[in-house]
Each structure stands twice: as C-alpha cells, then as structure tokens.
Image (tube, rainbow, N blue to C red; front, side, top):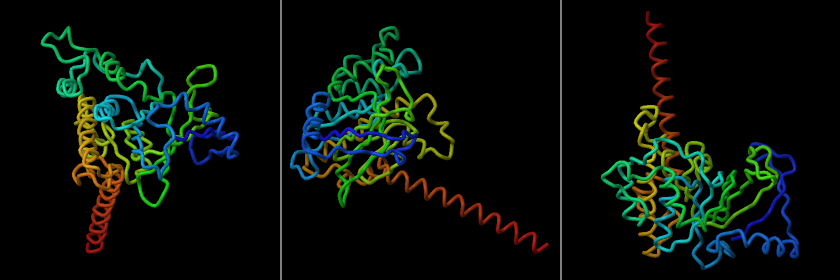
Length: 307
C-alpha cells in the first residue's frame, strides 16, 4: 500500500478546502516509504491498482459491524485494513453493562470468539469484553486516530479506491478536532470500501459504486418512515448481523474468483448494502414525497379556484 504524507496549509472542516502538497522526488518518496511501512499492516504494503496481487478491503469504523466484517475476512485470509477515528481503549462503547444481544451467541460461535452466552446473566460478557475479544484477532490490521475525510476512486471502473485521512491526535497526544489537524496521509489502493462508522459516514456521503454500508447507517435509510424508532435497543444486533452477512457474501464471491468490489455480488446483497444503491433509493423516496406534496398543493389550488 502507498501512504503519502501531505501538508494542509489552511486546515478546514472539509476535505475540499485542504491544499495537498505531494512530495514527488525519488529520494523523498523512498524516505517516506521507509518511514511509513513500519506502521502499516503487512497485508497492505506495496500494492498498485494494476497489481495482480489481491488488493485489501478498507473498513471504516471498528465497532460491532466493522469488527464482525473484519473477522469474517480474517478467517478466510482476505486482506483488509480497519480504520477508526478513536484510539483504544474505546471509551465511546455505550449501552447496557451486559451484552444482551440476541445475535451475539451465533456470531461468537461462528467466529470462534473468546466470549459466548452463558445461562447465568452474571457470566455474560460486557460490551467492553466483546470489543476486546474482537480486537484481539484483528489488532495488527487496525489503524487508529485517523479520520477518513475523502474516498477517491481512480480508474474507469470501481475496484481501486484511495482514502484521504487526517490525524485526530496532536503531537502531544491529545485528541483534537478535524479542523485543527495538520497531518494528512493517503492510504490505498483498496478493492472495496465498507463503512461501519454510523450515521455521519464518509462512505454514505460519497456513495460510490463498490462501496458498502453496514450497521445502523443502513437502517437510517431503510426505516425512514418510522424516524428510526424500530432501531431502538437493537442497533448492536443489526450491526453484528450486517457485518456477518456482507462478509459471507464477499467470501463466497472471493472463493469463486469473482470481483468482490461490488459488480459481481448477488443483486440482493448489492441492493441491501451498496452505498450507491442506498443513496439512489433515498433520492427516489424524497422525489416521490415531493411529487405527492406538489400534487396535493395543486389539487387544493384547483379546489379554491372552483369555489
């Protein structure tokens, strides 16, 4: 994988306002490659879009959905890289003390996780225990304290993605906002990008073909009519199931030698998790609602004229 350091001359909250200064001379590139290679996951080094080596999959967000998806890929030796804006320990893990999630028992058995459900509630794992059991196996492929601000697809078709990231921690080790970040790194290429980073997902905002959404982010679109009420108390359950389902679909296509960037996936899976399809359906729903409202207004106007 190529990681290129860049300088933001006037930091801003958006990636479009960032001025990137790429170092292109051979000596600087060689020095940068040596400096960055030690901190990058081994599976992501020295790849190019034209390479015959299988490109890794980028997973943005290392909570329940992203970690479950990563575990499925890990068990089948599919290369991947996890990105998370936070740095362990994950203090943002919230919810009930005990992890009373219906799908977890099945997921734990399928993925050979350390913790599984017990009959006695006192023996059940906490949410922190679950996250740590997930992280234990995939930690070497995890890049933390980086915020993905832009996803770039290079080439005529999907399957060659690059992630523009910024640091979320200052030189003193303190957490900082996106606006104050002065360090940018470009990661890639990746054959596919999966967003498990919630409602404010960069994958959702970009909505490129070959990118996918898993976890609660998808249900914000699919359950639009109830304002998300049916997601209450089941967000983690949905996230685990989504991560496993999409992971299994990717594994099946990979074992058949098919392109797993999205084009050759089963149509049902593509429509369910594709960021592009989710965005398209959301746009169509909004247009439908607008047309209905306009029709109602025009009907009211005609009725008033007839009076």
